[in-house]
Image (cartoon, rainbow, N blue to C red; front, side):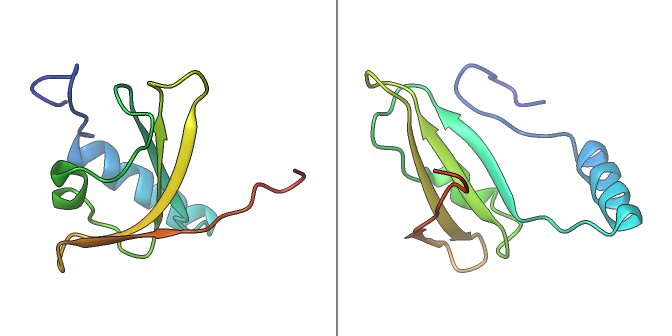
Length: 94
């Protein structure tokens, strides 16, 4: 529902609330959120990413698509504290 979908993303609040209700009903927990930065080969959270980071318990994966191969980096982002830090991750089975 972002105003300019070419340069930003934003989920409709009603969709987020519905997803959270469905997760609670299933006994699921939000672990991670991902999105891409198509013009970055070394992705890091943007000001918008930090401003919209409403889930400090989640890991935010950002995929950079500008290089020859996609680059995935993971972050803990705090909208309330206006900060972020990179975190390590492991893909199971690799």
